[in-house]
Every structure is written in C-alpha cells, then in structure tokens.
Amino acid sequence: MRTFKTARRLSACLLVLAAILSLQSCTKDNDSSSDQVILLSFGPTGAMHGDTLRFIGKNLNQVTSIQFTGATVDKTAFTQQTAELIKVVVPESTERGFVTLKTAQGDIVTKTILNLEVLVTISGMPAQARPGDNITITGEYLNWVTNIRFAKDKWVDSVDFVSAGLNELVVKVPMDAESGPLVFYYGGSGKGPLEIETPASLELALPAITSFGPNPAVREQNLTITGTDLDLVKGILFKGKTTADTVFESRSATELVIRIPAEANKGKISLVAHSLITIESAESLRFEGDLADLPPLAYAFYIDKLENGWQNWGWGSTVDFENTDNVRDGAAAAKLDYTGQWSGLNFANGSVATGAFTELSFSIYGTAGTNGKKITVKPKEGSGHEIVIEEGKWVDFVLTKAQIGNPATVTELLFQNQDWTGLVYVDHVGFR
Image (cartoon, rainbow, N blue to C red; front, side, top):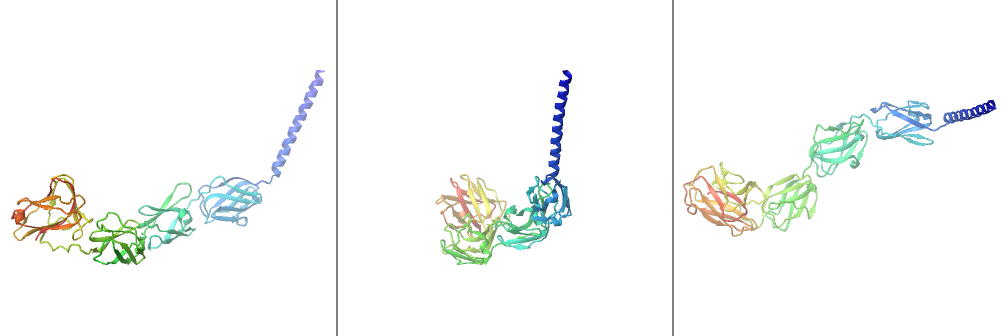
C-alpha cells in the first residue's frame, strides 16, 4: 500500500515538472520571436561633432532614421546597422537634447540627453551698430550659444535671438546697451556654461547735438534740436531739473522737438540715451528776460571752481563747488546747503591785496523757503555787510570796499547765514 502511494506521488511530481519545462520553452520561443525594438544604451559620453555614436539594443535593424536635436540621419547614412548595434556619425548641426529612434512601430526616445563637447568660435561681427539694430555674428557652433552679454551686464537669452544657426547668429542690440566687448555663453558636455569674449569692442552709436533753437528761448515753449541719431534719445535734461523730460512733440533721427519745462534754467542741455549716458551740448540754452552775462572778474575766489588756491574752511554746511543744476554764468555754481544756523562758507588759505580793486562781486540764487533770509559777508580783515536773499531768482551783488571795511588784504572771506537753514547757489565770487 505504501509503495502504491509513493509511486502515485512520484508520477504527480513528474507531471508538474513537465508542465514547467513546457512553459519555459514557450517563453523562450516567444522572446526569440518578438520583433519589439529595444534601446539599451548609447554613447560614448563626451562625444564631439563628427564622432561616432553607438546605439546598443535589440531589433535595431528596424530603425529607419535617428533624429537628433537640430539634425536627422537616415539609415542609409548609418556607418553600421545590425539588430544589436547602430553606429552613426554625429552631424555638425546637432544640438544638446534627447535623441529619437524612428521605427515603423513608433518612436523610441532616449531617457537621457545627448550632450557634446563643443568649442564655440567667433570669426566675425560688426565693428559698429545702433541700439535696437540686428547684428550678425559669424563663427562655429553658434547654435550652442545660450546667452550673450553686452557691456554693463545687458543680457540677451537664446529665446530672444532673431536666429541662430551653426555658423551664423543674429541678435537685436538692446536699446540700453553700451559700447564694449560681447561675451558669449554656451553649454556642452555637462560641465556647465562656458564663455568666450570678443577681442574687439562693439561700438554703439550715441545721439549728438548739432544745434538747437530758438536761443534765447521761452519757458513752456518748444525747443527744436537738430543732430544725429536723435531717435536714440530717451530724454532731455535741462539745468534746474534732476530728471530728464521724456515726452517729445516730435522726433526723428535728425530732429527732435520738446517743450521746455517751466523749471528750466540757463545752461547746457543734455541728451540722455537709453543706456543713461548723457551727451551735453557745447552751447548753453538762454532764456528771454534772463540776466546778461557777467562782466569778467579781475580776481576770482570762485568761477566754476575754487580759484587761486583758495579753500573752504567753513562749518555747519555742505558745498558742491562743481554743481551744474543752477548756474548764473559759466559751467558751474557752488551749491551751498546751510545745514546749521550761523554756519558758513569760508574762503581761506589764500591772500589777496585789494589795492587794485574797487568792489567785491558775487551772485546768489535763493531756493524755496529762503526769501528774505540774510547772509553776512565779511572779510577777516574787514567788517561784515548784510545781504538779503530773493527766492527763485539770481541776484548780482556788488559791494564797495567801504561796505566791507576797506581791508588792504583779504586772507579769509566768510558768507555766514543768520539764524536759518536752507539751500542757495553762489556764483562768480571775486574782485573788480
């Protein structure tokens, strides 16, 4: 009885084993007969344009073409194709990106990005251009450029290029770019961005003034400016204002018309480019009804700057001796901010004999809040004379030597405010 049971168990085991072997045999047959195209790997890493890439897999003989980013290679151009291996030369126009194997069954896309070793070169670019113009750069592998940096950190990304090919790249010059070399950034081989700087600078046009009129002009009336590249002007800066006026009555490359602001003062006008570079006129803008030009001084403490070795030994005040915001005559005036009461601008560290002169002359402009305020003018060797400020206008003061105590020599000349604070402009201080 035990023998029968043992034999029956052995028979059942043999049947199970036979079924397993039969199933394995079917599986192998199915695998060997499958026509599914499978990509296992491709490389090598760090390949260059013109190198041979290898694609390893199964049933690769069914691949009809390989599509790179920027190029497609038909199977007729493969250097080798078997069921397990495809060899293909990397086209020159290939860019960084995924690779697609084309088959009748559908596309097979690589799971990793193909990156190449590239060396971008620049062989040519214009020497000059205008902001806003398109410029053409020639070289090699320019389709790998990701960014261009103009001078003063003005960037253009590849998505904003006009066009980019293997040997030619077209880009629009930013309106706020400045003259200088260009820096091209590009990727490749997974090492991060690389860069190349042009040895020569790109010189960008700036607007220029030929003439303007009428001169003298009338505030809140039109001023016509003629010149070159005036369509590149962002604004006009008038003396007396800290910001440029950007609204034009009309504008072309050779003529610009703008309404003169009420706050404008006598002085040179400046064109402001989009790069914020300023171009100053050679001639000063004058206004009808303005004071006449000052007669020359025989001896100067200050004309546009400290003269004859004089220094400021004042206190409780700040002075900008080369300020151009508000000028009575010439190129600059002293911007004097009395920050403390009974403070002073004090011309010192000099000496002048007064025998050849008859009067002390200077001009003062009072800003808002200074009307009627008083300043004492006093040479160290003489006596003080009180003058009264008028707000919103230049006043020319002429003091006789008797009014300042008839000093034979002056070694210091003080302008002291009387118990007030505020801002005034001082110009053309000296003897006649």
